[in-house]
Length: 232
Image 1 (cartoon, one colour):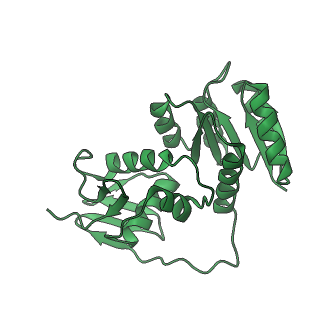
Image 2 (tube, rainbow, N blue to C red):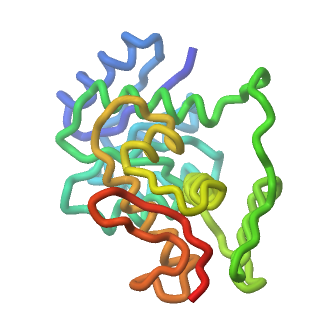
């Protein structure tokens, strides 16, 4: 049984999210502000945190930053549509994903389950294809999870690495955002796919010589994304 900490200053959101998570067999603990969230997380270390960005006393971003500095904890952020910059910062300080308000409780539960599957050991799973990829100055090593651009190390979050390696392994193949949500994130529930766009933007800023004219991570307009050889 997993313990999930739900942090939001709106009681109705905590109630609905808690109800749906308990239905799936999770233990749910709740906090209404950032300070209480940190206190609870230290007293009862959760397996995952559902964390609102806009909180009294201590912001969700600061809560996430402190949680990750003390103990690696999966975090799904709850954000407003206008908070894209905060979402990008949140992913940078260790959040695993975000979902935009208003949201479907079923979608949130699906995302929680997907993150838990990803971070939980899978002893019976077949070994992954771990071939390193080197192309046009970009080197991606799945065994060490290192990425080098022209010999210089680039720091990626776990999900950024997963997305980059998946696309690089399937060079020139076009994937829709829905397909990437399913194949990289593990979400089979159709919902908001803007998280793919945000991760792609962050990846381009980290590995592309010019993020506004990407060499590797190409947008196929009206369809999705693909990885190319990067040669020009």
